[in-house]
Length: 164
Image 1: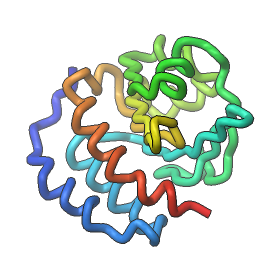
Image 2: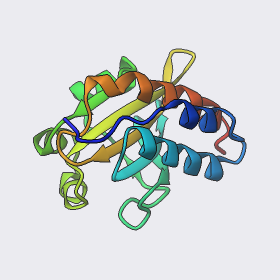
Image 3: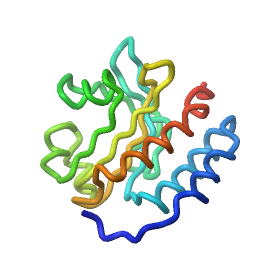
């Protein structure tokens, strides 16, 4: 479990909810700040999901040197992909072993000090159109973080729909 203090999420939810989602660059900076203040993260990425190919495409990264915008991945079919992209349910990886099991780029992820992850699906008409991914030190995220994370993901839907 994390050792973070409880932050009132309402001001951060309000900041995201009242942001201009047409200015996606600014919106995702506000979202990054809000998620950092409430759930915490070392790395945040936002990915568009291409159902036709199964690829994910990064369009936001809090660390563009390690994870540049425009990077594409083809996730390996398995329980993680089923849970996140088919069922539309968040995924929590609690420790480095969870990161190793799911992500081909686990060495880079772990080298950045990220040993836990909370993947939040962004849904539109019952289809996952993307994800918000926050990563932190081992044991940082828990099931108790999911409702707030899902709320932020829902507030991000208009920005995802505004992507070119």
